[in-house]
Structure formats: C-alpha cells, structure tokens
Length: 43
Image 1: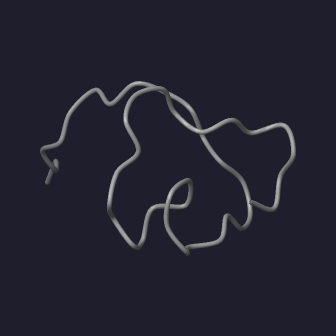
Image 2: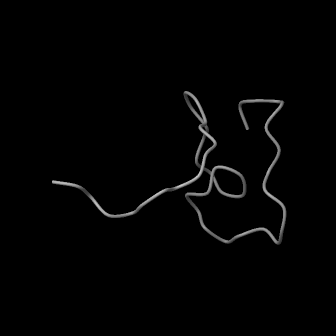
C-alpha cells in the first residue's frame, strides 16, 4: 500500500483482485470516509 497510516478493514480478507487492501490495485489520491445516505439519483 502506498499510505503507511491506512489499515486494512477488519474481517476475513476478500479474494477480489481489484481490492486496494487485499488485491493488486494501488491506492492513489485521497480516501474518503463517510456514510451513504441514498443510492438513488435525483433529477
């Protein structure tokens, strides 16, 4: 991983190749942490 202060999520490791924590995808830019309010799009 490219950032030393970011820890992988708790739980069993996933088998996704595109996972930035357990796969080969690199973390670039900024990571945002928050709560999803809605998954629907407004007009």
